[in-house]
Amino acid sequence: MVCSSIYGLRGAVRKAQHLHDAAQRPGQPWLYDFHWGQEGIAFSAFNTMLERLLVALGWNAFLIPFFWIGLSVREGRVFLFFSSFFAVLGLFFWYRWAQMLADLLRYGNSFLTYDSFPYLLGGTLRARLRAPHHVSDIDALTFTLRCIQEHCVSTGSSGKRSTRVVCYELYKDTDTLNRDRLAGLAGGEIPVEFRLPANQPTTSLVSTPPVYWEIEARGLSRGVGYEAYFLVPIYKAS
Image (cartoon, rainbow, N blue to C red; front, side, top):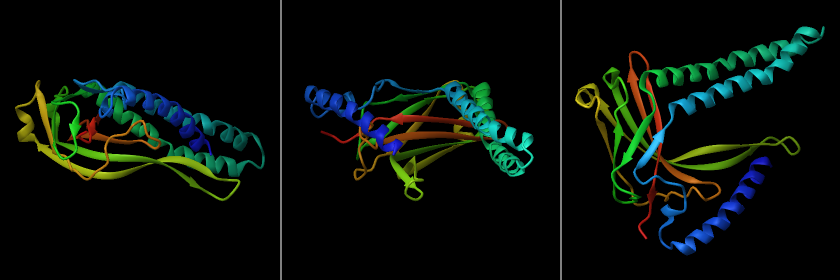
């Protein structure tokens, strides 16, 4: 149970720090749950592009030994067949990398400014997205607010079990700006506003598994699409 071990070790260390900080700042979990920047949060298209590149390279590196067996061993056709099949599936990773590379080159990195800190459940979230380069290229910009909880999910039979982290969407709300609404925002800031439900979980990034809120910004374009993700500090009033 690798996932359980990772969560258990990380959880024990973070819980000890959490209890210490909670005693110092009772009723203010946003001061110790995560290293929030109170002015806002950045999305690095460069880092995301690099992560996707490493995933694609790692997938190809994993398949190299199977290709070698398939090409060098007389009875290795089955290895060649399956490695070729999974190499084709791996083209998806390269496609996702190319998407983010084009996003980086066209729109650059992004920054979401918080209008208040923290946001409280039952209140209103207002923020401003620093307009990306070439925002006039975007036909529609959709903001999606999500509450997500991670879980470790084990599959397989005893002795051959595998564990992976799965993200469950607990809440979702969307708002879309069309080209007309975006036209006057080039070079400025794009307003973001959501009404926050009172009956949803609070942010708890220190928990194992963690619960967090994020805003996804996705722009549709006839050319290069826009994509960015931002954590937002949403807590319960003390």
